Length: 148
Length: 148
Image 1 (cartoon, rainbow over the protein chains, first blue to last red):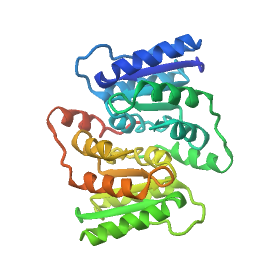
Image 2: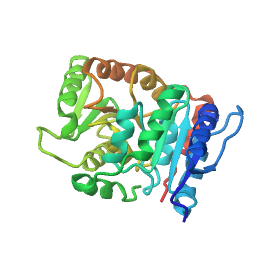
Image 3: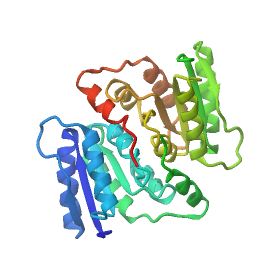
């Protein structure tokens, strides 16, 4: 188990933002697991959501960051897995609430919709904010059920 | 099957916005299925995500709108179901791309993070925008796989 390692994955719409956030994480002393993609070649975002889910399932990483053009497709795909709570956020407020209310373990950003400075702030707040528990704990537990 | 019926569901954080969007849909001539909640009493958002999934699974509604405080929790819970593509959007641009790129069948909004006028515009664009298909179709198909 490597709970302190943060995994990063994106499709081609998130390559630049992923590289930037990877640098931020390394500078801050975090362990980083980069699951790709690299470069501008068109790839399918569900494949990178799957890679993230497997990294968290196996314990190779404790938390993750997913990026596609808007974050929508890759967040839908990641949330297919009942142990993933992938939060698509648009600002530091939603990044904070994703942790305090939803105990999100994956931060999702839009590589073509969010600017670099906003993304860096979202990542920082996401990593710093603890889960509140209390009345939110039962809801998080309900989200852990497999559905078909 | 009632593909033209639009289902609405929210937790207590989305009651006011749900009522407002319900009025908009009825004024525009849409069939509406209101799955609750009503009133300010605290409820669990996964229960309303489940109600939405069952309404779409059964064909009682073809599309839906889900609302919780931020939209994060209810979008995670809804996307547990492989036939739901629930898109948490923050503006008309992401509402449009959720349809054209991701073929989203459920629009997700934050009742405590999004203003009423933005929400009305998002709903309008969501309902009007067709799926582009093409290179996006294979990715949408991949998202339809059940995961555990």
